[in-house]
Length: 154
Image (cartoon, rainbow, N blue to C red; front, side):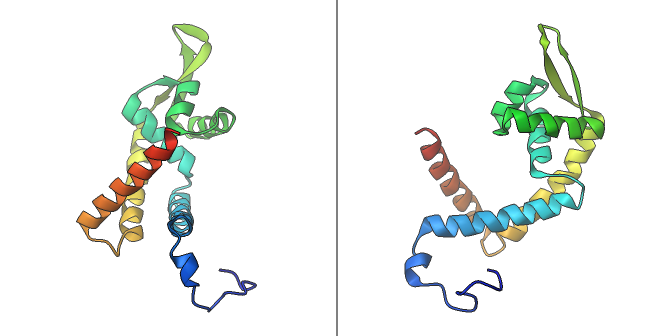
């Protein structure tokens, strides 16, 4: 809420509290802010983290494939890769099978940076889900994944 919010200090109406979509949006905004601020402390952004994780798990890939794996638009991914390459976290090289495309690889420095980012992200997940027990966290994550996958198939 902001200072000019007419609802500031007022209880949230029951009809709004009863909407899972609203609650999901509020939690998503909180999570996004927490992760963005946490990664910024290490001079990183969410897209840096996503690209580095995808490269660690999937190995070297084309920029187009990295875009598909991360959900980052190709045009935005170019800037992300440029930033990561400037910092020595990834390398780009022509694809031996198709010299018109680039293959992106995670470097040793990138792996080290990702390990630091991973620590921050895990800590933030703990902070975000602090009100839940470990079993509830797993169940909550399973529910969110199921809802997401259901709508992603549509």
